[in-house]
Length: 353
Image (cartoon, rainbow, N blue to C red; front, side, top):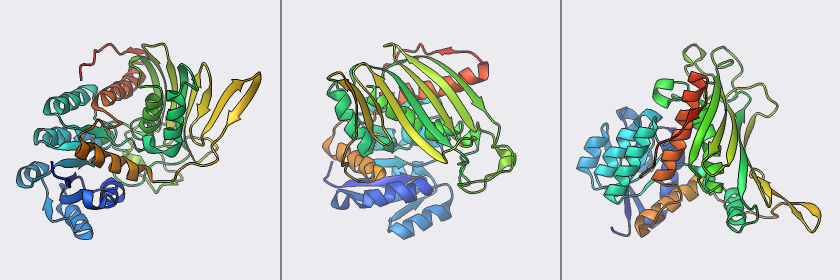
């Protein structure tokens, strides 16, 4: 591969315009954005004009056939992550796919298998991994400061934060609501810090209490008459190594804070909250709290894109892998299945990816 990564964009929506493209451009001489594709031609043309992207397509298949591309950003609604990623991998491209990996575990497994067979990078847009708090805590975890982490709590709660744009409230296109959209970020963060243990059993419940009626919208007005997702989900996940996670996530709930995203870890030698970062230990017969006096400041998305580019050019493994995507997708879909059936779900598949 040349020293310049030729990048194509699939999906010309907000995440492409607000996160991917601006941060590819920050990579300066390392990246050239050569094409954008969207089923809505006007959106693709507008984006191409704004960022001087030379080629515009309404079909990503045509784009992959017509233009020499090294790497693809998949910025579509969740339903199209799998087909777009598969097409890009089969065309010989590395892929940065927005979260969640897919709509089903089977799709995530096929994506991971295809990337492995093609010898291409497949990574996902879990940008919270690149937060300075997460990176600092990971160093403490890897250094044994928390010991064996046997429990965690995941929180992704909004008081009235139902997105009033896009297709976030459309279950057919998204696969679900806050669990698969914001809960997945904090869940991935917890799993990353815990070493991505293999899931064993999940139990979940979902609620639709506020989203299907008119109300105050702190993130714009939403179409409450066609609200087909959960507005809140709760769950418990156990892992084959004996660890467990409690999860709570909502777009709308009657809670105090307008927006809370956090992970709490509990280990044998210490515990921690991630946002803001605080570590809890017992040393020299004293209970102590540790807080950093300084953390570097750089955008999460900027680091995500920069590290994807470097991984492609240097042919090294990215922080988020296809196998981790499979584990995560099994948990998400297991929680939805558990909520639907009203019983715990055993996750028994063996991962080969």
